[in-house]
Amino acid sequence: MSLRLLCYGSQRVSGTDGSGVQQTPILGERMGGSATMYCNHTKGDVYFQMCWYRQLPGQTLELIVFISIAKNGDDYDYGNLSTEKFSASKSVPGSGTLTVKNLEPKDRGLYFCVVSKHSDTDTAES
Image (tube, rainbow, N blue to C red; front, side, top):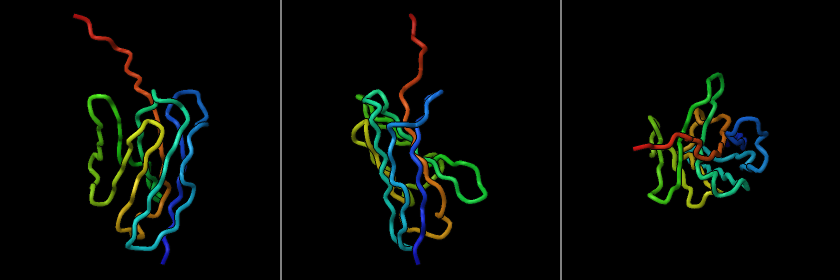
């Protein structure tokens, strides 16, 4: 039996249309196997943050993982989700992957890749 995962690439910046972000469009993989989705963008190295979301049928969006690559080390935050189920990688600012392992019927849904740049405009003053 095959499982279908729909993917959608997006960009998280106010007032933009998501252009320049490409993602694996549709995956059909076997139950018990793994599905790897790819996300690439041409926004430049300042867009070094990536999030993967999913929306299961009848549910709201759920953050799977937040990834930030930086000079002081990479940060992967899976929140409450298991790294036994999900694996993400991002070694360069312009691309990343998400793998869903041990596919089950409950994994069927819409998966989103979102890229962003650091937007903290506060500066520390001493």
